[in-house]
Structure formats: C-alpha cells, structure tokens
Image 1 (tube, rainbow, N blue to C red):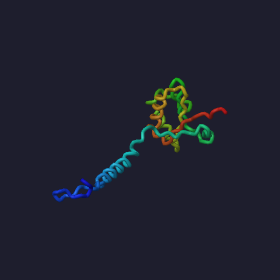
Image 2 (image 1 turned 60 degrees about the horizontal axis):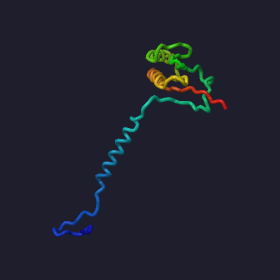
Image 3 (image 1 turned 30 degrees about the horizontal axis):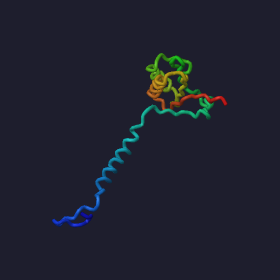
Image 4 (image 1 turned 135 degrees about the vertical axis):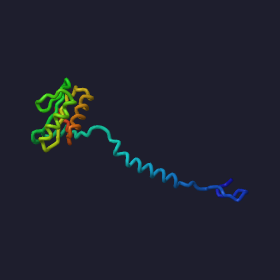
Length: 140
C-alpha cells in the first residue's frame, strides 16, 4: 500500500510521525537535568595554587597553616593536635578570633590520600571559607 492512499474502507494511512510527545518528554528531561546538575557536585572545595606561580605566603598576614607530617600527625602552626576529630573545635576557636577564614594545608607527599581528605573535611567542618594547598616550586 502506498503512503497516503486510501484503503477499501475509506481510511487513509498515516504518512507523518507526530513528534510533539517526543519533544515534550525531551523538554521535561532537560529541565530535570538542569535542576539536578548543580546538586551532583561532590568533594571538598579546594583552592589549589599554581605550582609554577606559588603564592607568596610572606605577603599574607600570619597565615593559618595546618600541617600533616609523614607519620600522619597534625599540627596547627606549631601546636600539635591529637586527631582529626579534635582539629575542628580547635580551628573554630582560632578562627573566631580572626576576620579571615583562610587556612593553608601542607601535607607530606608520602601521607596516605585518605588521611589528607580526613583533615580537609575537618578543616571545612570548622567553618573555613577558603582552603589552600601548599606546594613547592620545582627546581629548574
């Protein structure tokens, strides 16, 4: 039977596909993805400095530096902290006296990644607005 020809009972065959329901579904899916995409961000926000252009820490007034050494021990400046769980309350107390809520994190290259993330989560949980990672400039 040819497209558009009438059959014997007086009905014609359908020669075009109706795409309106398809377009409606696609628009709904587009709106759903646009709304949910910003919610799918994961992880801890970290402002990483460029390695080639390392920031001049001397220009910043008394930066607050959290250090994780090779053995996984945590220090704030020169004060030792027993664990990552106790890091949050100590940082909250220190940051309450400061107007800038910035912290720099120094971690030894041999520290397990999980330990660094644990410390970063404790720092962010203390109300830190900006967390910077300290890196060394490579020797030319």
